[in-house]
Amino acid sequence: MVTKVSVVGIQGPAGASSFDGMTDVNTSDKINESFIRWNSSTSKWESGNTIDELPGLAITSIANNDFLQYNGTAWINTPTPTFGSGITIIGTLTNIDTTTVDIDALGVMQLDAATSIDIGVGSSNVPVGIGATISETTVNDNFTVTGTTDLDGGVTVNEACNDVDFRIESADNAYMAYLDGAKNAMLFGSNTDTSSIDTPFLIDYLARTATTTVNFDRFKVGGTNAITIPSGTTTLATGAHFAEPNFTATGTITSAVTVYIAGAPSEGGTNNYALWVDAGLTKLDGNLTVDGTSALVITNITGLLTPSAGMTLSGAVDVNATTLALDGSSSMSFGIASSGIAISIGHTTSEVTVNDNLTITGDLTVNGTTTTVNTTNLLVTDKLITLNDGGGSSSAAGSGIEFEESSSVAGYIKVGAADRGVFELKTPENAGVFTIDINATETLTIAGSLNVEADSNINQDVTTDATPTFAGITTTGTHSEVQTNGATINTKSAMSELTSVSGATVTASSLIPAGANVIGVTTRITTSLGTGNGTAGYAIGDGVDADVWGSISGTSSGTTSTHADYTTNSALGVFTSANNIVLTAVGGNFNGTGAIRIVVFYQDVTAPTG
Figure (cartoon, rainbow, N blue to C red):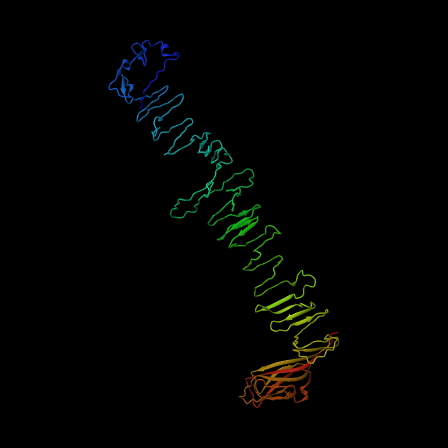
């Protein structure tokens, strides 16, 4: 190590208060600026007035700021003394003023002082180097840097893991960055040591006044510079990633949370949010639980909210979106957690559409003015439909069912509007209204067909013990007249149609039943008869008498025979056994074409039932 010095101090033996008190020092000839020298021939210290009086000096070409150095043989002057075995300066070393100062030692170099040691303070902008590129420099006590510090290599703080703190101050914050060694905690932005062993990482900030019209962010992760993902597949790329804390609890944790937001600010003039996702899709792979007294308000949804593992909302939910799509691959349930929970769908003027089957397991109450059912078939399994439910006294007038055609009422079944004792029936086909006046408890039973023309009146007693009078009665099928104790006389008819008639005769077998009291037999050609074999008509007989019920001339469709065509009294009366009707061709045989319908009119009787 090489250095330049301008003053060397020499300390006398202990016990002497001055050089004059030293027994081996001769200071009798001292003058101003005299010095003390060691005389080896006398083994005493002597005083001298000039440095030339020092024995063993080899001074040549003395230059400004030269040093005296003993080279092992003699003292010489040199601009750069060399201290091969080290140098110890006890006292004050000042005024080293050269362009370049290099202090180097092969062993240990020690700079020590009672008050302070200054290196490189004589001039500004003077680089000071300590240690080689691979040397380690140790500062055993406080280290203060008042200027700018550039660290070009790696920095390790507290490598020995001592219980020490590390602190960085800003202009107004003594704890801008603080590492608490004892608590194993770090904090940023606070102005007191508020770290905690239970809060190992804290970000806070001093009170401040933000810049007007400029957004203020307490903590921000910037995204200005692009991150290039290499080719291939990257499973996950995030701007901020929070791993599950991996708690190991021997006790009970009431709530364990990966990210906790204490609440929303209340100072916003328009909006106050605890969490704001400004744009893009929000993905929740787990359940979303909204709890508390505040409502979940979702506004301006333009996409689809898709919770893939389900969504449970236990508080109030207010979803205000232009289009809201709720979809589930299996099922969707609303308000099933507790009974008696009211569920509202749609605004008071909104229309609600159910696009598929709707099943209601409870009661359905419709309070609107008009209920419209637009369906092909309305199937109601209830046995009773109540109209005017809950209506007041005498309020059922006009209630019933109406039928529309061309957007207007064309028919109806309803209680009379003016007379609640009648039912009014109107069909869409006719303009007339059929009124049923019910003024007594009676029963109307119609076993068969009942045809009453619109201009007919039934204005008499038609009960079983009455003798009503009718201008005429037309019935279809069997007409039975009930006598005493249920005995009846029945007027009946039997019909047979013979098709593709062929040969000299055709037979309707047993058309007259046994015990029948025959009134008459009639026939009608329903398909014209072929005349290729000379057929000109036919006779109607019983197999013995060929024309007992007469004969007809003609072969055209619509030609008929009547009851008056019979030729003998044996055509009428009781037939004790079943009898055939035989048609015999006139003028030639039937040629296999044509059809003839035969009707037998007769009466029979039944025994009394009691």
